[in-house]
Image (cartoon, rainbow, N blue to C red; front, side):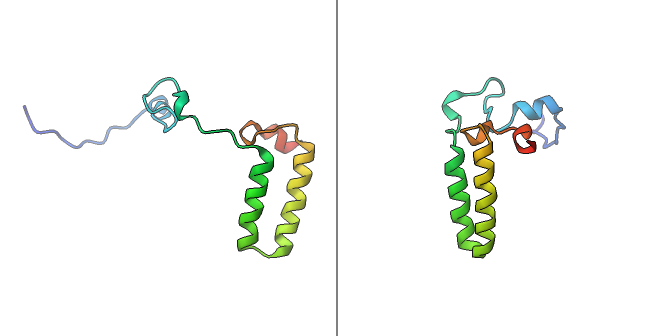
Length: 89
């Protein structure tokens, strides 16, 4: 047999989607590898604590006000459930 050649094969869009890290076996999602859902209020608090370490107090207050307003108007509980429509309304 001839030695293996290192040829780059161009994948189709469907093949690339099936090989995403969330579908390690190329087909259906594996539920054991699904990431835990993150609650919106916890994500906001984590983001603001990271901002406090790097940004000015004024920027943190402004972002906190905007995120608090968004959280009160958004009916979603989990960060992953937020859609583009939620951001536009």
